Length: 79
Image: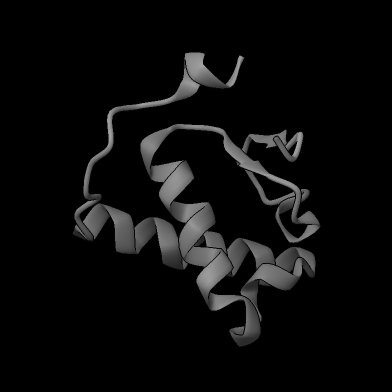
C-alpha cells in the first residue's frame, strides 16, 4: 500500500504557500493544544507540513504526528 503513495524523489521548494501552511498548521496545533506547535518539535512540524503540502500521507511510528489537523498518517511497520 505504501508504494501506491510514493511520489518521485524531489526537492520541495519552500514557497509562500508552504510557509503559509507552516504558520497555519502551527497556529492550529497551538489552539488545540497539540505539541507540534512547541519549539522542541519544530523539525517535526516541517516534516508534517511537507506531507500536507505534497498532499501525501506521512508514514511514521512517531506518535507526535497523531491528530495533527488534516494530516494523514500511515503507521510504520518497521520493515
